Length: 203
Image 1 (cartoon, rainbow, N blue to C red):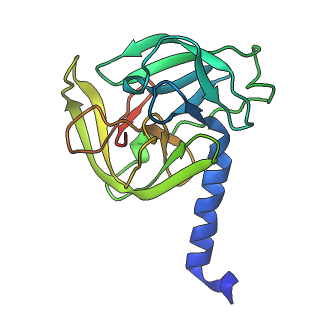
Image 2 (cartoon, rainbow, N blue to C red; image 1 turned 120 degrees about the vertical axis):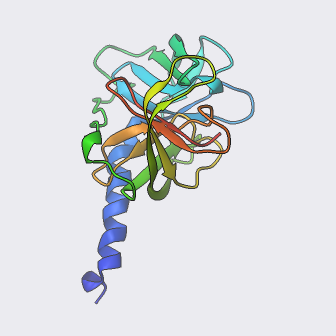
């Protein structure tokens, strides 16, 4: 009987998306209070929210396989709250595992009301997920520290401490943007463009 229930199928589909995407979500221990999340973008490159980093090097990053290599900051953009980290791992690997990046979503197919899934990795407890919808699509969002961001998405999703730096996904598990709390006040956003996209929400 359960197999005929559409809600059971929907629930399983969401769980499958989370499981498929989870290897690309990492924990970053760049501040004192609690870890933030990050997106394993290339074999030795991780993207995260720059406001969550209190130092430039020797930053522990917990990968999905449990290994914790260190990383250093190789780029920051305070205007979009984006930081790029380089992992101290062998080229072409992800801490000893084959690396498979998150596919990038086709943002032209995104619309208000589209389902969205936010992921985080909070220390050793595996991934955490939160589900909602795209609340609004905005363009030319003004930042407090730089030029306007080309395209911004506000997800209507409940996010928790440590979700900053984690990915926002579409229902296919493709990457829409990156969660951050520093693009605006009392609002939740996702910045998306030809550059690595950013989603605004979380701590």
